[in-house]
Amino acid sequence: MAASASHSANVTALEAEEDQATISCSPFVTAQIELSKRHWSEMAEPSDGISMEEEAAIKLENEESFKTLEMHPEWGGLFFKTFGDHSEVRESAGSLEVGEKFAEGAQAELFHARVLWRNPKLNEEDEEKGYEWVVKVFKKGTFVRHLQQQWPESLLQLQIKSFENDELGKPQFYRHYSEVYCATLLEDGRFAFLMVKEDEDLRTLIDRKMMESDHGCGPFSK
Image (cartoon, rainbow, N blue to C red; front, side, top):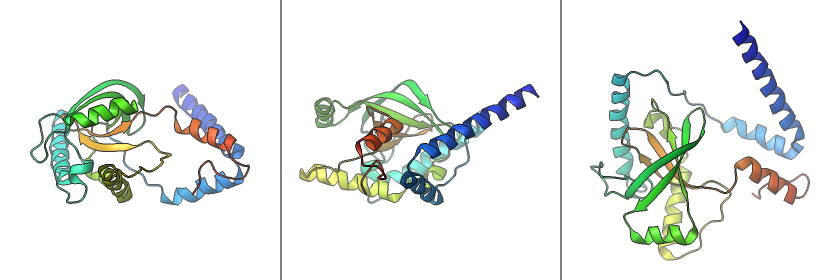
């Protein structure tokens, strides 16, 4: 009973905090948030209590799903990459070392990562740009086929355009988002996004942009 009361108090406190955050936003920002909700989607949370047999079955299915993604004619070789030597489809992109976990959400965990690319040019670029890497690893019990329903194809098309610009020496897009460089499947069957480590979180970026912008405008241009 005490645990239930405590949970209710926490929920009430969180709701009050969210209400206060919404009130503190400008009418423009609040309207944009409400408008965006119609596009939100939900995905079943992975189960923490899966058996070893279920885990093995999910791993096998995820390997087959990822193999199909690797063979996609447009973005298979560009976006879906294998690290190590466990792919039957593509040559290894290099080695990926998953480091310390620094954040966790309902669906995934974030880890520091070290990447050593097979292509020496990419290692040189990482050093020149000062890139650090993180991996967003979806929890055990998550099916790749479920995740596939969530990501927009525009993400993949944008990445292809970015690769093409890089090959042609054209300027890259100026971005206001955490760049998902590629997707991979870890040896234990968990799906992961490899991402560039950012210097600040989204909340801090929005607050800073709002202070820099005129009143009534959002943090970013169209």
